Image 1 (cartoon, rainbow, N blue to C red):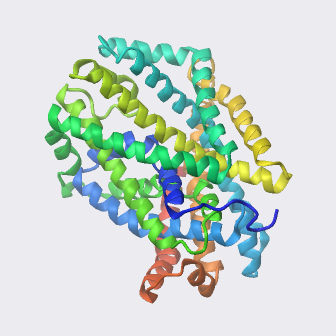
Image 2 (spheres, rainbow, N blue to C red):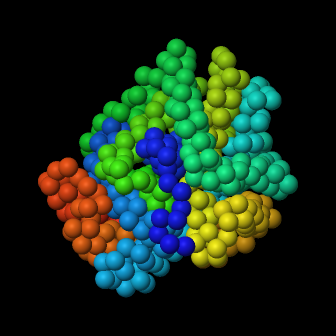
Image 3 (cartoon, helix red, strand yellow):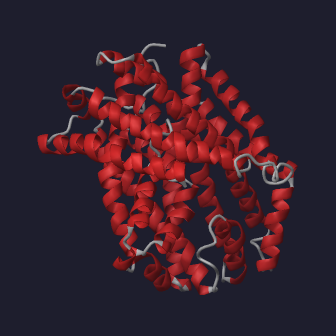
Length: 449
């Protein structure tokens, strides 16, 4: 397939909603507020904002401009841009690394998305009435032991994602995110308004925004760099693929600023959704993944209107999960279209089917295969380590090196089309001298633990 053979976004709004939807996932909604509170509150937010605009913005701009210049899936775009710049076509392997990372992440992520859909169903049916700490823990453990149940909800999430991708870029992805992302924003605001009346908002604000600058340390800065890199979704193939569908008249720099700002705001607002209930009912704010599936149901059982709030909350999570899965699966679909000549419909069905089959292994890692380990990790732990500790930081590092050192100044300036020469100079300085060392640090610390 030649460059430009894929559909384009029909509007900037459609692209922004898809990109923001990909960046805003389950990790943003529960992990970012938790990490913020554990790393100095407002001090961490300040360091994170510096990192996200100095590291996240430059590399996201690079990934999208490579995608738009190549007009293909990540391997194809890397190859096309490399050849135009007189570089080795072997750079396509960086795009392949991005594809592999997205695929591995999705095999595990789709199971978690299935949990969210299952809990949405429970919220609709019961509203978690009468659920206490022991009941919540027992219910969660029962879910992990229920292989058929987890498989059903995992496949339901994959089917919903597949339907969106099956319909194409404009009729599927763009049409879906135009509805789903505004819905997500509205749900967030409604839940914050509820907390303003229900109480607990002041405690959440103190937890998230009070700056304790004595907590600024090497590990805290490293956590901020890592959060900045992972939260915007680079090196996962999705942003480069979405960039391949971006028309030339849409500004990459302005779009990236909107994407990063929206992603950060959603993460912060999510803290004002989750933690008021946590503090009001004396629950553990450091419960990690269990915060959603074990701690919050207890809060929903105690709060006025908890049935409605629980439905809105898990609907919010479901939207975030599906839009993120779209961004993870679309790149493989595009790659099959290019390299196997499959029609989009066939490509989408095949990718969904393969991920669905492999998700069984992820499901079994929570029960039947829980004690099978290699290098001290179970199957899900190995996949997570390979994708998040190796492939993502290494892929991001190589993208930065490619964009900063292998793509000519003129080509980068032409594609980014920044109005200010100073702005372009700052981007080039960051992508060459700031981003690679930061990602190298993430890679080294990820490998060494």
